[in-house]
Image: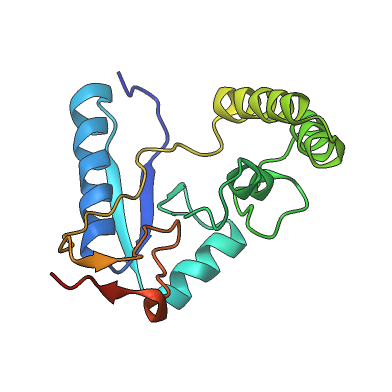
Length: 163
């Protein structure tokens, strides 16, 4: 019920979507956990400095995998990753990610990632809350257009099918 819970705050960089996410968390934590959360909007440079210095209680952050593989998300939480600005590390997680990087057995590799993910979710240095999505409206005459993970499209290959 939030009793004796430390003062909570969420830092986020200036963006209306990020503000809405932080406000939703603030409302849910207040309503369901009786925990008050302060929202702290920061300009990009200040926000990055706060993250680097670990000067936050919670930090809104995001990541879009730049390749279709679990490692795109999983290696960023290792103790050696510059992306890991949570202050969290554990040898068991690091070892599993390292083993996943060394094995040539695809099934074993996924097993290592699954075990690492279980550690990550149990220890909760991060709280994944949503996945970025895109909605496209495309005329059926447009050909050779494909959605991509980073939403970059080689338009030079597009063409219009003539009727």
